[in-house]
Length: 533
Ligand code: GLN
Image (cartoon, rainbow, N blue to C red; front, side, top):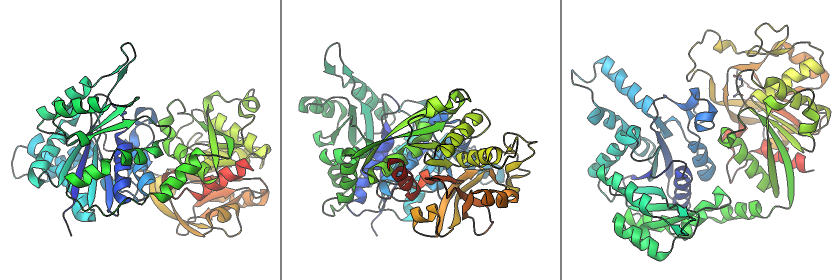
């Protein structure tokens, strides 16, 4: 087999330019030509993983099937490529240093002084090459978080420089993404920030091969020539990435700009015909030509930052397209919901999602939203904490269990309907200690959930410490809320539903992590369908 080719995606001028989307789009185009592709994210922060970060910092924490808590960009990679990622696809500075320091403590460096170069850079390079050598990908795309010039990105940039030197230009490629701002005062697009940011890369020993320019307006051929001249790249390596209405348009846009063709040429890869994008285009067509519009409420406590619920949002978009429907998502802060206003706030919603979360801030608002959905026969989808709220609401208002709660919020509740999992007792460290990753779930035949999935065995991803307390299951089932999904190994309740309701499902896992463009998650599809009808 031919050697793995490595593509590095760096960013300049500012953050949030969409390196993740460009990486995922390029990955999609290469995959559509038959290449075996994966995408990796290197994050320069010192946290070992984003699991301990507040969503306000970097948005949601994405969870892989093998239980890694990762950057949300991995969600884009999976949604675009339809291929699962693992822990190896996300590396942080914290993880690199942890490995190196552990080796030092073991004495593996044989008395040497341990330094950023070569020890840290060697560990970074090992983690990049691992994907190629161990998993045998044709192409590994490595996205480097942060912006060139940041102190914390330096070891990564240096590692890329070394890899290019070691593996040769025909095996490595650097794509640099920058911003070309439009100055309305003079009516001009400006390329100077791009020139400067390429200079920063050059100072670090890297000549980028392709430049992707983010812009609000068309970049003329003359401007492209100017960038090519100042930045030592070919004219066809100056790629424009203009703003579009949906991120799912970007692969098509990049194909028009011939990003894939340029990459293939530079890496001396076989062309493999033209990319097979028919199913993708079919999805886009449905997305852009909806026959209905439906308004869904998303109840959460991090709603100020939409990235906090990235995967849920995207799952809704996939499921909406599948139902030929545009979904208007109304984000509602659970802290703003109370006894006096909940009817007013939730009025007009055709479906209600109660989001995952931790701690008791805003919890009563979430429970009120469940009550509203249950009593008014409005399709309800509870995800992780959302399921737990549904269980608490049912206990208090249907079973008459006064002050029932999750022991996460009320340790001394008389009815601990949600309780700490056995294996969680005694754990005090916060990082990487939850029940994480894929676990099997057996679905009860004849349930709404079964109808949605159309199979009885699934594997879904988890991220929680608390669970439904099986001591109460009988009471729930007698009163009309049943366990529709159970972990066959541990008997833990995975899914609760209310057969008498139009659509009322709560899941202990996170279906949003596994919804992709070409394979929307069946529960989201079924939920949106119920909301439309
Ligand atoms: N806080 C809850 C638990 O730990 C729910 C977690 C979540 O919503 N991801 O069980």
